[in-house]
Image (cartoon, rainbow, N blue to C red; front, side, top):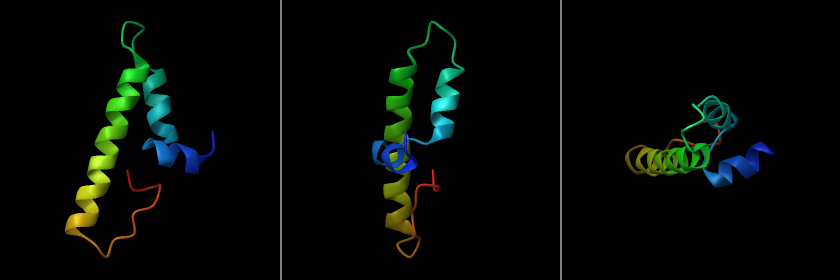
Length: 60
């Protein structure tokens, strides 16, 4: 997948790598969903408290 598509989803390539290394009994899709929500929340907080910050795809 393209990095821009992943950013739209709220995840990075590293998030996918981390999810792929989870134990078999852990649902990687659910963990990626949690990660995406956490990343989006982080971006919102960053922009709220530091509006001059440019939040790009690398700011997760």
